[in-house]
Image 1: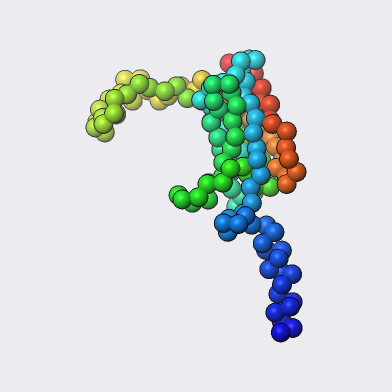
Image 2: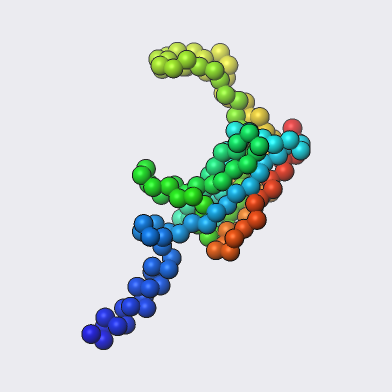
Length: 153
């Protein structure tokens, strides 16, 4: 009985760090991306965790440049928000090709050969966590929306 009583505090500590579904608790991270003062639609925002074993979180901007990130845990479970910790932020947007559904691989390769790889529509420095200069620390306290103002060509 005494061992059982000693295990109760450890079990409660374990539960405090998890959501009700058995996955770690995430916290909301939202924001807005602008480039040269204009909102950016269709940009991918990725929070890259500072530790190698940390989980990244990502989201896509809407027409107003707003985004909310989600953390991927498994094919059947993604949680809104990010785990607590320090993150570098990347923002990228690639040119989208208009293609037809159901193209054969050789037809897709012909398009790639004709047009080349998709072009970056935002400055490349923001696509790399080492050069973006964008950072955030996620905590359990409610966070203000991020304002990610991108500059340059």
